[in-house]
Image (cartoon, rainbow, N blue to C red; front, side, top):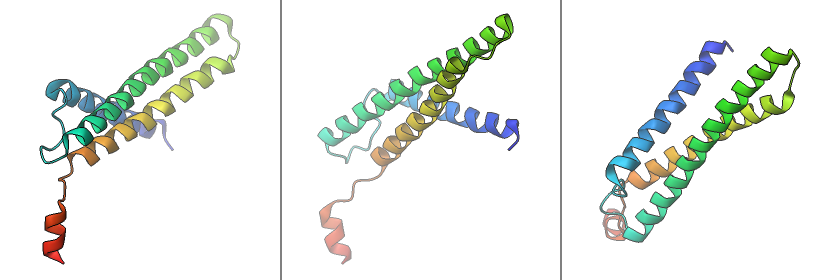
Amino acid sequence: MDRYVYFIIYAVFIFIFIYLLVMVRKRKGKIFDGKTEPELAEKRYKILKVFLMVAGMSLAVGIVGVIAYNLIYGLCETEEPVTFFIGVVGIFVFIIATIGGLVMFIIGRRKAISKHTEKSTT
């Protein structure tokens, strides 16, 4: 694939990450539907915050790893696979944590289906 496609995919994940951060900061725990049980909503909120913290840290590690790799190569003109590996793993963890946070956000925003409405439809 073309490198521009990777750039677009990465930009989409950064946009999703920023959107989730804004939603968590703006609503401060009231992200999920009011029909969700409070204990369950609080648990999902904590899991979402963990996903976002992991994504933020791995984004920083990925960027630092890639910059360190380029600096070492530029200054010493030798390949340093460790910093390259750290940068790539950081970027992959960022993508996985962002997907996990998005899944928790979507699951939490779904309308809770009560048992009463299930019985009335059958």
